[in-house]
Length: 349
Ligand SMILES: [Fe+2]
Image (cartoon, rainbow, N blue to C red; front, side):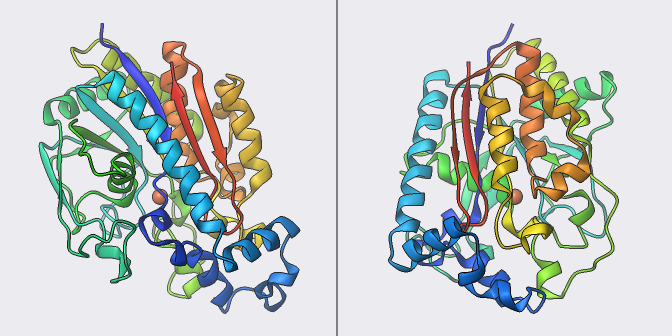
């Protein structure tokens, strides 16, 4: 029986950039013509958000936020180094990357042996945290055999997953995968393990209408919702099935949920400015206290109201860990009002 390690991380795009641009998303929302005039004035923001904004203006908030995230990534990396898997499966979302108007899959296993990515291509020339060239190409080893095995097993277990032998996205791995890999290799030692990307249609009703991000605020999207993504219960179930599949495989597998939690730019009740921190705290308590079964009951409406669309990646992990009877041995929630989304990290054992 194979060994399985469960991990949770963020793939927050602002962490790819420099500290000065870390609040770029909230600035973009403030400038949106759809943002009510009073909410464009920081004086009308919640008090803790005003405080964080003032700290950012003073040049302190972004370095402090980065330091916490980098430290959390190094804790997760340490667990990965100790475990030394044969393959790293990553559950990640797609924000108008592989899946666009010509087809959206609910779940897709990428069974490919090698992937070339240009992770900084979407940054429109703004500097990255490492001062690396904008056209840098990252080579990632895939694991076609494990991908084919997993897709086969999931289909046999009653989950009609899609599979793909190549990336359609022109810059290679979508952000959810490549960013997590870059952050897990923050000090650029290299990542020696093959990767198995597992797409989850977290954005559902926003996939095309909001282009998985800001189109609703830029006026380039549509208010017409797309069909929903999978339910949290379905993600939980496919996570359980994934754990069963790999438990019976010859491989040692790290299962990684890659996503931030509540995203400010998805929270309508907060004028798309800041995350639903209360909802994230509630989910974090459930994670910490081993109540992950509760996540099966989260409705799509509830997740969307809280801007927690990407939590579906973590629901897959929650199912896998429940199947294996594992609980977090370490977890941390990094809250923020102004840096796009709250971030959670976890190591199971
Ligand atoms: Fe994402």
